[in-house]
Image (tube, rainbow, N blue to C red; front, side, top):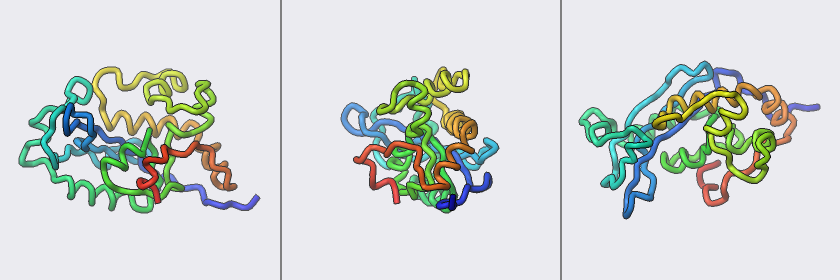
Length: 198
């Protein structure tokens, strides 16, 4: 069969995860607070806090570990700087992650849909956990498919990016083989986040 999409080389694959704080009434609106990107070997390419663009109403410290001092330090880069850096780093890359639409949304960066590998949307993972139409959490995927714990205490974006990458690597041949012949093996992200994809 003809190859519709070439299999990406490992140097073209990055994994990304973001941590958010809450803004607005009740802190229910997500705002980027930290972003981490790792390469195919899990080496850190970027791990930075992000200076808030609005008043933070909930640092979500119990789950994020983020304190005001992390974001309000004079050394913390501005959102626009981080946004541009992430856009430059991920251009031309295949992005691996879990619920990537949330990360792309808080970053305000669209990414080509065909260049995403979202372990939350990979249908064989969903089928294995008998949740064909539901997003399965990263912690659940890791425990059931790799017998490994993650997110045991506070959320850590480097750990989450590496966990998503490890899940992807266990099935990368099958995943890329399906894509190569034009058989997309994943569900679509929520339609309300279609702006996050090119």
